[in-house]
Image (cartoon, rainbow, N blue to C red; front, side, top):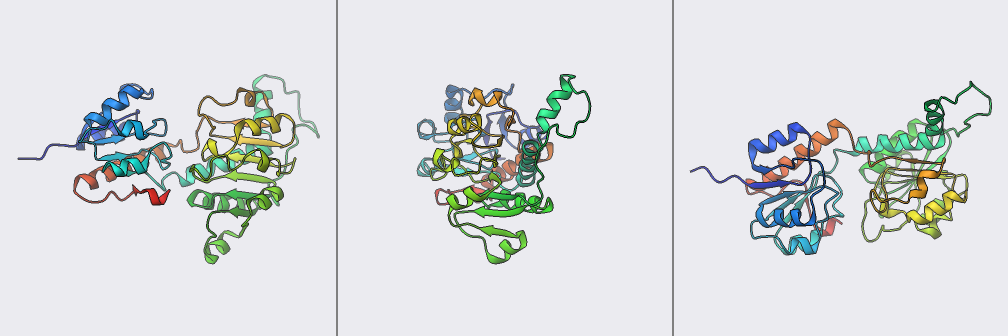
Length: 328
């Protein structure tokens, strides 16, 4: 007799071809609309499914995992970051966790450079003038921004994405600096032309641009706090395409309003969509709705990794992208 297919619950709408492939392989329950699941719906899902496929908008904490039935054996996250999942509690309950690393590296690095350009060259301000029909012609002193070439870029977090940002920054003639938990191997550092700073404070105080590219962990929460933000030069800008919680958003907002920091480009926010509304009022801030990884190619590749992780697990093997607490 053919074995019973795995029961898989997907918490959000995914690209059509990913959903179709999931339906071919598994007994899958797909989301009919693109709203996040309620807490009650998530609880029902973990009680009845063999595999849960959540996203960054789902809080899979200890309380929710405690409600899981005996069937739940794998949380196959659709995304690289797993700070919304209590990996340690899942492991204690015998539930494996997997993610989708690597596929969004270039997309996120591209968006980081886009934000750096948007802030330093005042692109949104020019766009707004054009859209309002207020442009009256070229002027020598209008919309003066800054040249990227020669600027010091300080990358906070030199993993896959940080290194991809470094390669792009070098093409613009920027000087690349970085702070990381561990220093890169000399050959990697040399290939990137990157200078390592053991002291984050010292790096922050000397950079023209700070790019946040580290994951969200307990040790990186408010890593860019009020004290550290005050170390930045008043002419410096900060961009974040990683996780909002790494920056103290209220402190950043106050300093931007006071002109103590020249600008910011933010694709992520400390409290998700409930970001500080005062940020919208500032001309020196570029806000994006968590678009850093939003490419068709990236989303499909994420889905393919989810499917491979589930299929490998179904075949009795360790998912290739399994996440364990020691990795966090």
